[in-house]
Image (cartoon, rainbow, N blue to C red; front, side, top):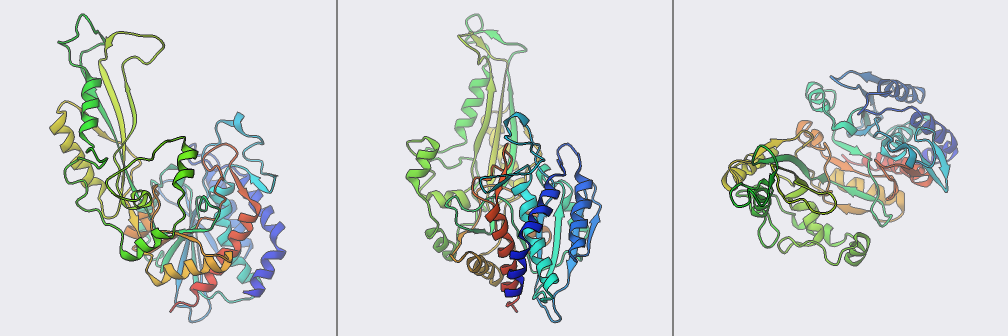
Length: 451
């Protein structure tokens, strides 16, 4: 490790130059621009550092894959996952410097893709290359899987993974994406909530009507939709959809212990959000709600007149968009069927459409030896214990690793909490970038101790 860490200190500027080169190449999967070219560049960067990487086709954008054997007798195989595609940079006028011209200001790299995800995936690459450059034998076998469609929902990765399961065999997947804990402490997480998104449409007359001339005889789809929405929640905030909680897996005693150690300042959260009180759902704690409780949420409601002044009408149509965050072991297909049944019972004429972009929940037990080893490694690198989250409240295609590949999946974000991923002026702290490389090296070293 000493040789590896010394090498990484000497290579700081070189690693920064390589990162600048990679993020200077636009790779916006939503537009399909520059993605294949960026895959080729990433592959070359890896090859130049001794990693035999390949660009492999999918039905969409290609993946960059590499398999680096460890020292003779290495029994553990880890797979580093990341994505080289980025979000669209719009709105361009909100950027203080051009999004694909990386600029350092106040100790941060500003550019689209700096933190999400090029800087973080390169941390894994540079750590492995440091072992190769110094002659230090890798204590584990390492695989890399970098995709080019994550920002578009990974539409082709499931099919590709199913067709290449033998090539993807490993003991765990490690992903560095997203920010560290809001406190600035390093963070490790072991799952995500799933997502089901639906659109509902209620229709009345064939046109908007005068609310006086037709009031009392014409049905009001906005009122129907409001009553339907109200039927989905109990007074304590829990979902009133029959069978919604049937398969929910609650926290284990070990996970409850982890929850008790997570920093959470309710007063600061309320101040930041401008709220007098946070939402209450049953008798669960705030953190337990975020990680172990499914939600039923109205994302948008559109009907009738919303302009200045008044317009006395009975609207002819109402549209409501809803998302449901699901937890282990809920199945999006099962929840969708229960949701449709609820709508048919309470508002028979309302049409339900299932939207694309959903994904199942995913969960890895933090009690696995490989998971505890990663937590130790992050603590070794940072010199302080990381914040450990049993799961994130958000969603990502983590199920591809846990359900399709059948592997434990561990998240170790390296970016600063205010990285502005998906927003203008996305940034990555220089020290966060460098410390991420070191953390990857410690993960490799620590996992090498596993049998």
